[in-house]
Length: 544
Image: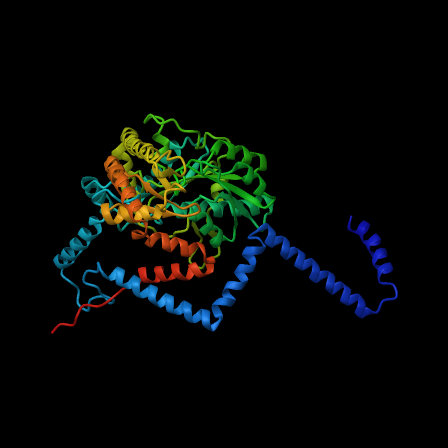
């Protein structure tokens, strides 16, 4: 075939360059090669971030180097760091930046930690925060703490030393696969959290795409409302992430998903439910799209993972979302939320073992021996594994049906109450555990002002979201008991903000500024926050 093409190509080139100097031939060939490279680069840009985002990405680093801009940024970052240090310093207890020169008595350590535990409990004990603390029962925490302590020093990396821990690890995974109606070949792995579960799923699709389809520049298609962990996976694993629009319900726009899929797409994503607005994406429709294009479909159930499998039995009909849906190839689920396990507990599931194998990491030539791991971690604590197993045993199916009834019921009562308020409107559908709302266009105030007022006047901590602007409450067991009080406090907040909208403007001002700046500048501010958050402050005064 090559020879058949070579002769006609040679004849054309000989005619084209007949009588030309060697320099002219070389110059023309160079121009053609450069032009081809530029066209390829332009095509890559158009298939990825687009011209505008590409140019902004080039321009922002240059702007930051300008003396006037750099001076302004350094001044603002210094002020931000100072403000954040002051904020975090308000609740420090016996601050230190070095280990004690002489070990402290156990009694003194326990007394200090009791003070710190009291400090860390007061912010959520009233049941007025969004998400974060899902059970809140001290008896449950004491029970789980006992189990955690028994395996706190055990490592699942060594199954021969800890056979019982290996058994509990595998049983948690299999129980969760069965909750999601996995078939005989369905499988999974225990991870440290929803982010790691999502990272491992995307790593599996990347490697599957290369091994099976030869895709070297992979992409995935997600909804703009999908969890940030998918974009994080894209950054970590060099998988380009395409964002599909939402429809009026804040579910993914299926037509846009179809439009974004190309020959390099390895997977699409649906949420059940998504974080910002609580909407469930149309998983069955996404499954048909995945089957048509022979690509993966990951269903993110990290937030509602121990609610959605029990909703039918709790009296709340729900659309298909699990492995019963044709086309679903992986699912992520967090027992450390509504499964009431301790933090550090998640499960990533696959429809078959072949796909799971693409998640694994193998190092067969390491000097320390053959090394292979299922997930990101090598060593990991055994405490979360044993405690998750214990929590699932303690609650059982009937227990989870009851907690689902309480939490989903409270979510829908709050949603109904908001719909009856003149100045507010729901954002999304509040199907599972999240109620999101915004101020109506003619309200005369922003939803962020409502969030500020609720925090200052009633102690409610709401999550602020953007694109579109809204605030939300993720219901938990503690907050679900306060559903009626939330509506009372919300009505009072609306009246107070209506009377003086400018009084509650801190969050609105922050998001207004954020909307006007390129992401490159916002990343500096976010980096300053992270720096301050992980910075140790102060030392005890020297002894007299």
